[in-house]
Length: 440
Image 1 (cartoon, one colour):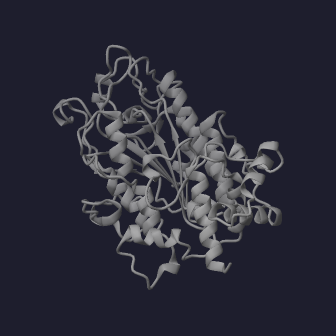
Image 2: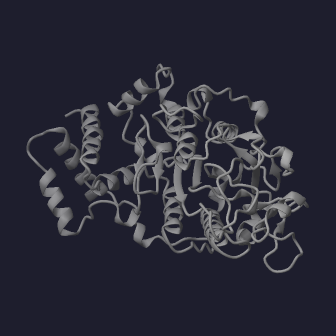
């Protein structure tokens, strides 16, 4: 079997096993090992706050009288008002006190905030708004691919020079057919630390969903792993058996990364739970130089209709997890943050006014955090629309003054080098004049 045929068998066999729902750890291990030594890549880490975080409590407009007029019990007090008051950022905005771990990064100009950002579509449906944000096509329900997958297609590889790239599907098919060497493992360019691949990562470019790196697939020494190896080490010579044999040879020859032995550095202390573990494993993959360019994690629990709380309570607990997790990831990556941007997002914001249950309802505009060595931080970006009633969207919500696609476009073009924004965000005029200056 020649080299090209062997690569085709490995790739097609791996896809076949994954499609059958079989644990692919024995395939993943050689893939990880096979990418060791690649040049360090630029990486984008996206964190989705599912459920619609209250951006007005996350980044508090304490200089706006309307904020306090609208919130009787849940408002975060202005800086200097005692325990639990906002952390002053610029004399008008302040961080929720639960985000204290991130304050230093803002002071060091390594974190920027975009406020009054969101979708131009008016939906207040979680399902629709998340779908629109993940496909990058607000108001269009027929879009099949996620925008992060389209970024992976657009930034695929320098080796594609001289080939026709106008047809993204054909380009992806070329890769699936083994046109590139196994040294560039396409599926590891995009990883999601979730049980299923989220909409934003779905598309023509292969990507992996890894809910727990330590338990991902069949382990080498257990009885189940041995059984799978006996099952797929056949004499039939088909794609599956060839892929399995190739993988088994690589496992014997190379040592893959060991999730169980990983020790965070830089004094990083991740929060307990799935979110903290997800960020810890993202750090491990980035530091292992396995070729990760886009990593995704999410954190739910932001739909605070009832008993939202202020400086303490339900929302504060979630923000504490977010702040501790991001800071641990940042410290763990250390100088690698020069090549990394962390970006948070949520499907929409929440109402300016507190409701009768001590919470907030579905709103419109929100805020995003951007962190990293290339971020021009220490600033609140965007046009603030104000909270006076006549300035609110539909008389109740913070108005959107920055389309989320402008934020995404600036980051993926400036940080990852995406060149065809019209393909990544179809039907949208990504005018750089609307960029907010997130990157230095």
